[in-house]
Amino acid sequence: MSDDPNDRQKEFGFATRAIHAGARPEPITGARNTPIYQTTSYVFEDTDHAADLFNLSRFGFIYSRLTNPTVSVLEERVAALEDGRAAVAAASGHAAQFLTFFTLLEPGDEFLASRNLYGGSITQFGLSFKRLGWTCHFVDPKDPENFRKALTPRCKGIFIETLANPGGIVVDVEKVAAIAKDAQIPLIVDNTMASPYLHNPIEWGADIVIHSTTKYLSGHGTSMGGVVVESGKFDWFKAGKFPTMTEPDPAYHGLTFYETFGDFGFTTKARAVALRDFGPAMAPMNAFFTITGIETLPLRMERHVANARAVAAFLEGHPNVAWVSYAGLASSPYHDLAKKYLPKGPGGVFTFGVKGGFEAGRKVVEAVELFSYLANIGDTRSLILHPASTTHRQLSDEQRLSAGAGPDVIRLSIGLETVEDLIEDLDRALLRSNR
Ligand SMILES: *Cc1c(COP(=O)(O)O)cnc(C)c1O
Image (cartoon, rainbow, N blue to C red; front, side, top):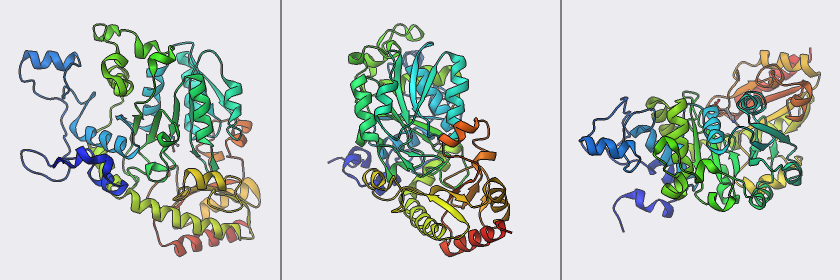
């Protein structure tokens, strides 16, 4: 058995991988924590070494837009937590989504996405991607067969959030994966809301997993970031419809990414072409904060879930609350799917409806004192938001309703505080909203 814990990753439990995967003591000084390699560039040994690096025939560091040692530790760590083969980090979750689709699609191509997504993703897919010649068809994920019905000959992928933002909805990921498999296209899962501690999409058949590390992975509201993980199991040759993966790339002397890099060909191409040419690289400082955050991910997620369960149960019994949508409640239509796919709990983000609609909702977000009224999730602090007037504002009324962001909807991201204090804060704000 090797002395390097990284060679034994598969044997280790989740909490061990969260602390050790990808990191080794720094060889010169022995520094135990991962240093912040705040450098743009790396000295070549000689001209052959430089040529090999540029030809991708040897691994190493050239320039921090492509690779950076601190960012590499984060990439290895998230890949290990998701049971993936490899990962590439990006400046934000949205940048990770862009790298993914740029690597998959050509102009004129199409893909399917659940209509229950983070509001920014609906805008990115529906409007900005459209201008690049990529068409997204939005699908109601309640019945997974809807994805099969929506497939078109130029569909090159299916994108879902198993646990959907703004909240309470769980998609039957195993069934959607089977549909993607039949169509020989990759299933891409945005696992931001669950985090790899609560859910591993690859275990259920996903081919690519995306995170906005801005949320639970960094975990403290400090650092933007995103990451793309590949399972290594998708057969790009067999599918026969991904020339970007299987045909010679003129930018690298005719190198074919799938043939050369095999089960990590997708993330290699995302890095060597999309990240290189568009440049949304993660900053080493942000990678450091995110690595540090991940070390306590299991502990934090346990508390996020426990607090969310208590707050959701309290709200469900509150006279000024019309409904609560949290898959952890027995009343939720997604309770059984949540038990299957998120056995440790369905996260810390959920929505509820306040009696009195838009006006009452506005009053609640203004009346809270301990909750912060802002647009983020996955912080140590508890956060509150009125999606209709903020994150989902750019959408049409119909899109808002179908995304679960109607006028009376309030979204909570439950933090790690003493839960009695959170309940008291909401109780006071709700009683005031009624006056
Ligand atoms: C925040 C978020 C994103 C976008 O990530 P950024 O880091 O803000 O770019 C994507 N998907 C989900 C589910 C999110 O919560």
